[in-house]
Length: 239
Image 1 (cartoon, helix red, strand yellow):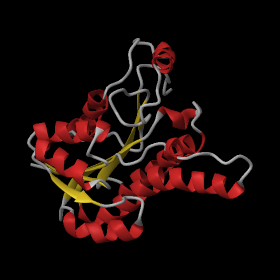
Image 2 (cartoon, rainbow, N blue to C red; image 1 turned 60 degrees about the horizontal axis):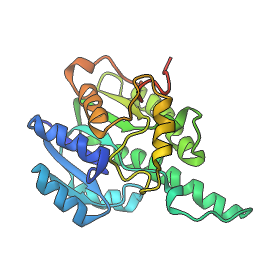
Image 3 (tube, rainbow, N blue to C red; image 1 turned 180 degrees about the vertical axis):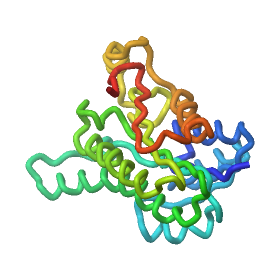
């Protein structure tokens, strides 16, 4: 039985990842900022949960007491496009800076902070998987895409730092339905446009991402590290 930590594990992709590990008999801890959501999800999964803001160094430090003493698999899933929660102020540099900081904190720093805090607990042969995005490859989304691109660069350095001790990789989804990502704003036309860019003619699902994460956490993926696995139906070809 492995100890698995999934940040942002209460809903969507994170929940699907946590459920996949739990179904294998692993001991799972999910994290997030919304206690009621986490509690309900943990009950469904038979998992533990820890409530904290992964982008806050103080909160991450305090949360260590509620996280496993040994971690075999860490999945950095917390994040999302914070611009969807903001009302842009035109020609305001402070607003622009705050928008960029918000996405960098939510998507990059959350992964950096949680990973760094848990590295002393990472087992030999451990796995670190961070959830990136097709947006990192120049498909738009401004500061969100830039934050996910930075995650890819950081993961390459992390893989070198870990060496033979553990692996570190990124799973980069394209369009994934049945999540809270778009805050209910994605129209049928928006879905159709994105699906048309794929080669298999469909949107992704949380389970598609979860199965890829399971593979990266498996013994068979021991020689895969520092890589970005693109799970987008061929909308972007990682070559």
